[in-house]
Image (cartoon, rainbow, N blue to C red; front, side, top):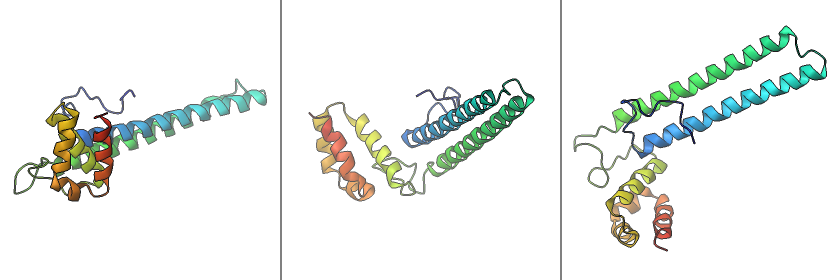
Length: 164
């Protein structure tokens, strides 16, 4: 997937964590859908006008301009929402009175369970490159069971799949 909703090479966005990258990917999917839907609407308009022998009318230009303006407004809304989420996430991820949020030393309980899943998965993927040792360490992690909730089994299955 090409990410063009924000410039990831920009210094402000170059060091996003797993949760923030998930936010960016989700926003990119929304943007791609908006652009695709607008393209489809323009095609339908062109076919409709062709069918009625009005392909060169000013109606087409006016309608296309409206479709493109709505597309741009919707994309801007998604981008602004993403920027707000990233700003909120970076403020919330600074830490608390125990220091910066880091799993497992100081886990961030303000994250959703799916975001916690990404944080813990990212942690274990960087702990070691040995899949057996990674799975062994994860199964011995008592904090992960309560921190991940129902996502614990999902992450266990994912880490176990690398052992095979």
